[in-house]
Each structure stands twice: as C-alpha cells, then as structure tokens.
Image (cartoon, rainbow, N blue to C red; front, side):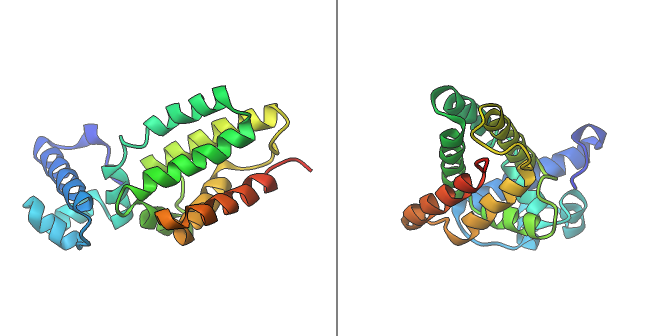
Length: 187
C-alpha cells in the first residue's frame, strides 16, 4: 500500500503529490495511459512511482480518495428518508453513478476484489464503512440479515459493476440489485 504521508521527506511528498495530480488529470481525460507514461509526465522515474504506488489500483484509489467521502452523507440521507433495504438499493445505484464517472475505478475495484484486497484501500474502506452502516440499520429494523459482511456485499457490488456499469445497462443493473437486496433479507 502507499506510504503514510507524514513519514515522507519533503521531496518525496512533492513527488507523490505530483504523481497523484498527473494521474488525476490523465484519468479525467478518459485516455488509457500506462503507469510508466504517468511517471514520465509527472517528471519522476518509474521507481519513484512504484515506490509510492506498487499497483495501478493503489494509484487509482489514491486519486479518488477524497471524492468518495460524500457518498457516506448520501447513505445517511437515504437512511433518514427510506427503509434500510430501499436505502441500500438506492445507495448502490448512486455508487454505480459515482464509479461510472471516474475512469479506472471500476477496473481497480474489480482487480482488488479478485485478488482478495477489497477493503484495503481508501475507496474500498469507505465503501465498506457505508455498507456496514446501512446493513446494520437494516438488521436493526429487521429488513436485512445480520450475518452479512460488508466486504462480501462490496464484492458483489463490484462484480455487478464489472458486467453492467454502462449507462445503457442501468435497467439490468437495477434488476440485479433487486436480486441482491432480496437475497439480503432475512428468511
């Protein structure tokens, strides 16, 4: 994972920040680009990039670290206005919208889930915490099972996004989320 910010020398911190800014710019452009090209564009060597971000997923997660946090407030608002099971469904659709607007995040989350690393980065951590909050509210209300791990639901969500993340696939995603939420109800 990426080093803690407070432990970096000033020049290393500048390099790290330059890599993040360059990657954010590249990801926003929508163009596919290699990590080596990002390092070159940022004015640092490949070793510097890989020292800070050993994988593409680590870099993608860091770029979107601060952008995921508003989804927590969305979950709170949904829980205040809808029953927990409906709030879960609605939040997962909002997450799909959020992820669809950010190049590379779906691919990074799928790769992390496939490698067993889901929940180990800032974006995954936030998703896990939001899911835990909604699942707990659902269990308390008797609408959702109490034996469900948020990591498992996050993995399911990522899997769904890997096959239905395009805007034209929204009806398919909505139906699949109906099945997921139904499967989370107590029997």
